[in-house]
Image 1 (cartoon, one colour):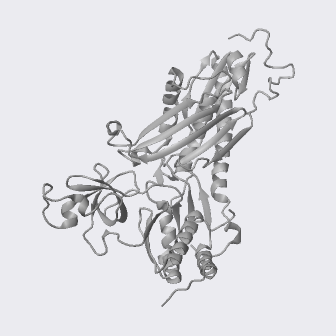
Image 2 (cartoon, helix red, strand yellow):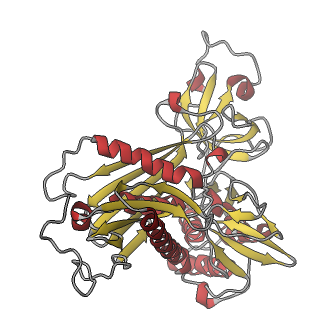
Length: 235
Length: 249
């Protein structure tokens, strides 16, 4: 851990005034200094320091694109598990875009328990459950590929700085990878072997998220796995 | 409660287990011991062994208990039937219900519960083996498990008990010293904030003794919190690529 660039901080440690960090990972004490609330890494970037939390849950924010799992069907809405302490709600009118009569139509025809959807959080203020919308490009039911779940705090690592890690994952395997902020990742691959490799790579990123030189190692891991499994990216 | 004929302090000033009055028992800690819980820890103070598991923040099954402005903290302190020499009835006793409350109040001041309104955070503290100081060991285990779960907290807490046996103040008393001694004072707190979150006293101490006892406990708590930090650093520190170096963000 003798890395000068990065330092591990534990709950209660004072971070200093020159640190980029957000609640709920930090708090301001009575003296006004910012302290860590969870374990995290303090990363030196140019003049400033950035606090990267290592633990935490997903708290919805309006505008976030999330991958949700339908957990219940109501009369005019669905209950969606978005990997958060708060269950989200999706209204029928939003999905169908037309009036809905619950006496003539059934909700489970459109989305049923166990379906995955990609949706946008449109409203959340912590007093009511988050409201989702599927109106928008690429939103709606996920019909192919696989969804894997990792800790939401590891998502920035899967994306990498300016998308560098995501680029390695997609370029090297030919898969489409969508990492949603709530810790769920949708992968769509040309074949099974590539899917297995991408999942292995993502699980490795989750486990080793707080190490340096990860992008290079993931690239190597994917290349080695491709040789072991005897597959290549076509096109 | 009098130590009739039992000498808990020898002529050399040592205790029945060979410790000096200001010594702690050997302390062992481990985090992430349960895979189903969001956070967990096992802590041993000598022969006292306590496991803690933390779940949440999550939606509780009973919605009526939710608070509109912060998370509810639910703590269950429980002694396993096999934790004592005589079988302990597993039903929650009056004492366990009280200790659950006392431990909850020892943790609440350091948790940032207002970050997660309308959710519940559950802490389960299970005493596996009891040899005195189970509530303070429980506080230490719960603190580690909460940090392991990533529940936002202002600082780490730890607990330790100070007792008085044969007129001598002794740190981290065990079962024998507790039952034969003249006083037992469990203390828990967060040294990073200078905050005492638990203070109980069973028995009689003079004002001067109380001050000295609190001072002993506080210094021990500082040491135990330092151990907690060491264990948490170990959890993240043993990353395989750390020594390989490399530049990348």
